[in-house]
Length: 266
Length: 163
Image (tube, rainbow over all chains, first blue to last red; front, side):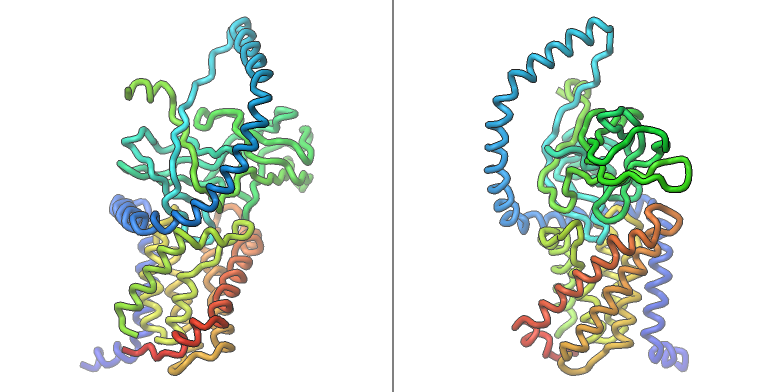
């Protein structure tokens, strides 16, 4: 009885202690299959409610985006002919040199149905899953460039890990000088290209694209633009990259599916 | 206010956080609506209720992210407790008290989150603190203050929450 009275008197502290201990236990079992089931369940339930809420702001954004895209379409149509010639020439030259054709990808359009609620904004919930051919590790892109990677998939939905997650890393290249490095999140909305030796040629204003090394993310996807190059202590440069993609405002993305897998599915 | 209303408010805050709140982002900084709810619950219902809600809401948010399960529930439980212990107010919460409670709560929560999040991994704590945590705390506090000066606060903030 006394113990109950004591616990009742200290219930604030007891509740806090239990909550903190449970949180620590959960942190240590984040990868447990039961945790994944819990995440899936919560994700589905919240997406079911949150998806209709985004219709209005999404419509407004789509309307302004539509205007902008029409303008871009006009400009691109005029450039298309010259690009077609260049592409045909490229195909001819690759054949002459005996280059293997790059693996091709199918762009699977996917809507963002929920966003990361944490301040790190490091993931998106997408409305495409295993039954659409989505697998963990596939690249997620937008019209502007690389957005992230598929991290978790269930039957009808998937979670994309954005480049603004500390666990994200992708091989990247300076387009002008063909210098390779690793692109990572640098805190905030910025990225950083690491593992670039000090003596290599990187300048402010250089475009950064994916290199395709590693075979997970295809090469040539735009990543961002170099905004700062610093020679800190050590062997490597500090290359700050401003991404092309605005991660906090993504509405639709594309998942890159291997074309051969899609052919086989049909 | 009855317990079921508090549960509904908390759930609505989480749903808004994953759907509409990201549209308010400024340079990838997004205000944390559920955090404001937990701080407010602490200030009006005391530490016990806010710890329970902090844990529950934090767990939901962890489940909706790709981070550790338990990280947000850890920081929200602590911030709920702190808010309840330091700022509990039985009657209508004065705006000045809310301003202080929300400022302390926002900074405390984001710093704790950032500290645990960056343990032993990049980006370093100080970088994430400056680029992400403090701007998020500031923006969240600002949203809390906008609510406090709105007519909604006059109606709801003045209510007794016992029930």
